[in-house]
Length: 355
Image (spheres, rainbow, N blue to C red):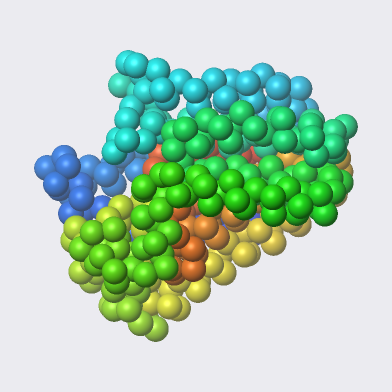
């Protein structure tokens, strides 16, 4: 157990730091929104703490889950994940918000099934790609999820899912050249999908020119920019954000990095980015002895974490259009936090399995 513990320690320490940062800034940024929604500035923080508690149980469950059993269940998990993605359109259990169908409400508990699907995709692909590297088979396998996420619509999650699937395809030995050709031929389709959906077109035009409608479609991007501008190099200090007071939308969820930047500055954001890079490095060290489907499973989980972090921070920095994906381990969001912590438990178990 000692070798396992010594290799796992850096990974767990970095994970703990990200979780603590998340708790601090969810408490800091959610107060005004929480007071407006629930009449108490602490309601969202309490919900986040409940999510963390469930997440820690999920982490332990992941450590106790035999990876080979998980891989055998891959097709079942993938099929169940697709079913959950479809059920968001079912009356009575599917929740619609601003025209988007992304949530399920079961027994009074709401959750985003796409978070479970990301995990199910990784598990299924880890086993399936060891014997299937044909691009045509890969497209057929991923296509149902692409269609369902486009219908919801959830472009941010779709980008994460595609990044995970394509990365695993290439790592497993699939042709990068053919995948690149497919991506190039898909650009006209992407342009059409953006053009026919007003909300997608608004996001792109806002990204290109956020000042064109500063009180309308450009409001979110402009307020994030103001938050980062106020933060400067060293920030305004913890608790001193003014943009969290109903200026930056989704301040405790998708835009939490903007509040971090406002209060801790460019330096604070660099620390957060550095922690994700360190987590990736520590995770890679854990996976070094692994081969085949077990290694692919761990790589898929690390890819999920890093791609989602990259998309979130890039959107806040106005490098890409707003995607609506949470910042892993930091943003408020119980579905994402619980599934990510369970997946991290799997990564830790993979190392133990090899030893």
